Image 1 (cartoon, rainbow, N blue to C red):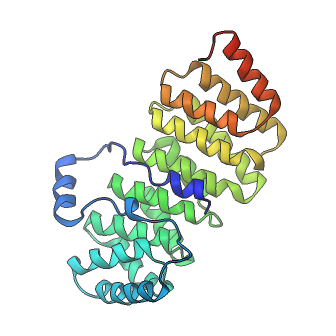
Image 2 (cartoon, one colour):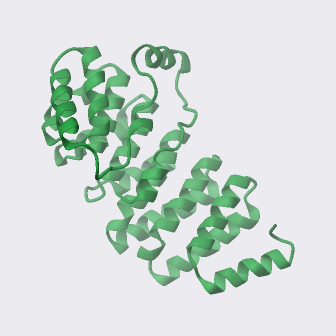
Length: 269
């Protein structure tokens, strides 16, 4: 996973269309913070011995009770160890949404072919938006699996926080082939135009900029025009800023001249 993709995945949690009191009480009692916020970038100088000890301890916790599960899940939201996968998979079926959510994050950190279908089922059917949000994030680490269409469907239909992460994960899922890139870009372009949430539109721009090099020239041109349109017309400053950044990062002299012309004409500050 690229640094930009990892960085994007550390954004704050969006508002969710669920019962806030029920889940807030559960989260306060059982989980301090979101495991997503604690996933660190790979550190090549990390002490391997300490990591191995932490994993050994985490494996023991996962074989105990509810409170210990949460401690073990935190370990595997940070560390990779294939021994954890058989212990993580059953937790996807637990009644407690905090356990399911944390297990999903841990399986995002520890991808396994065995987890693909259970994760896809959670994205489609789980009643808890926190769990679906975690699943949309984790599936970005399963780019070789058949996750593209489920992520597109989530971007089309789910609540804002899930759409936010579905758009980001589409950048990863679409980067494995030109055909997948084109399919992902098609939906991202639509969502950039119609999604009601600025943060989702911004993430669509971010994802499209990551897919740009994988696209055929006509689709690249369509993406550029969508960025220019967002820069000039989107009502939210954050979306306009994201569009301008994306255009500048394409490092195209013609685009640079075009932006300069827009500034000279007073259409941009």
